[in-house]
Image (cartoon, rainbow, N blue to C red; front, side, top):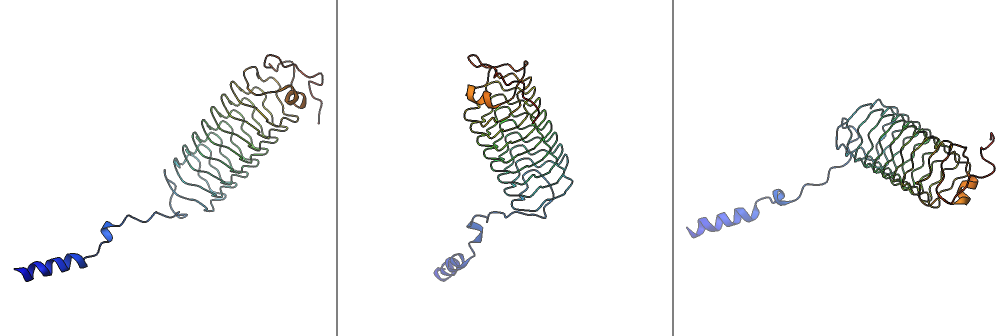
Length: 232
């Protein structure tokens, strides 16, 4: 009996213990099909037709989506840190709560995209089209939005602290509670824009910007004599 018990103990001691070890973290699967939670980090996804795909909560860190069609795609909660959207189409896409910090999207189409609560800190979106997009509560600190189109966009409660918005167009945009502290407003277009509830706006910023008789200003600020701006 003692010998049998001893053999049993030896067998248990020698048994593999791999079942006790935690599973190794999955690596990005560039060949994986589009799906919620997919990991395409650092993958090349250029010139693809991904419209209306559900990619919510996916990982796309430094993914190259340049010139791809993502119109109507679901990217809510996705990690798009440093992703490349140059010339991509994201019209009507849901990017609510997505992380687009340091993402690039020169000349990308974000018309009527939903970016509620998204993080666009230091994102480079020069000449992107955000007409009718919803940035409610978005973080846009130090974002590069030079010459971007934000006509009729909703930026209520958005943080545009130190954002570069030179020559960007905000005609008809809603900026209730938006923080423009330190934003660079050289020739920024605020024609027909209600700025009365915007925060952090100074007379110096307005003097560098463009507006017209329909621009509504915060209390204490006045329209510059140079308004409306002439043609550049």
